[in-house]
Length: 390
Image (cartoon, rainbow, N blue to C red; front, side, top):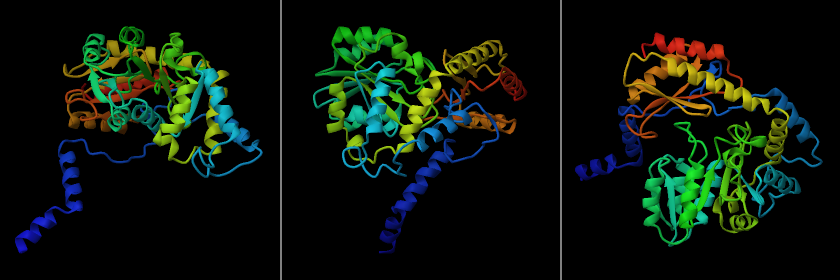
């Protein structure tokens, strides 16, 4: 009996969780929460500096104070007590910015992507997503009854192979800008392949919202392809500096999601303050589009410095694509973490991205640039890198 009791003890939930955490710590990829607000921001998704804009803060406050009726919360889902005329007006406003027939608001980009992928594809259909796609899209696909494939990153040849194996309605999912490498999706080339197979293209615009396109309407609109893409998902917690997201597409799709998207139906709606923040952020950006130019200028300067950087360790290298997201590849979880800590000690707020978030050997320091960063800060950053013998 004592032996059996011991075996049962070893199988307790606490021991199981402890064992899993210990394994992660041994691999060097244990996660923890930290606060480093005083450091130079080279890590956040606040690309245009709107999250920290005091002007925008005042604008949001004034617009919120001007509401006739104010509540601290939405009080329920949109289908119950959480809807409002202001919310519907905001969706119409966003539809005009994103050049879509309609939009539908969600509480986050994560829930919007999950809603689309879990509810739109049906049993017998096929979802094909880029291997570098965000986790929420993979999770949404798993919640659907459709079969799923991934294709090699931005590889239309591999996409074609997967399309040849597909059945039913086919949904191809890509990102406009990929969050780890910072490169753009090959939207035009992938769209051409989708057309040849009658597949519907879905584009996650999370990291291009606000940063690209007229008024911040993203990569697809900047390419003039908004009428040819089935759905787009826009996120407001990155370049727009606030919170929330929306799906942009046909009115039919909006109606469908209202009826079948579980993460829309069964969650409390965004509160009025969040709605006002979204509207204010887009209004503010229309009068401050120079922020996009400032961001592109500083990103180009970083690329110039990176191309000139004399690496001492041949295993390390930069990935510099035409976006605000840069990556310094430092293979190995422990090495990437050690370098990140050294950079933080020198005043730079960066974060290591470790496997399995990225593939083993592709561990990195993810560097996000902003309209408020300066060339002097970038010069200092590269001086610190050299000091740390990279």
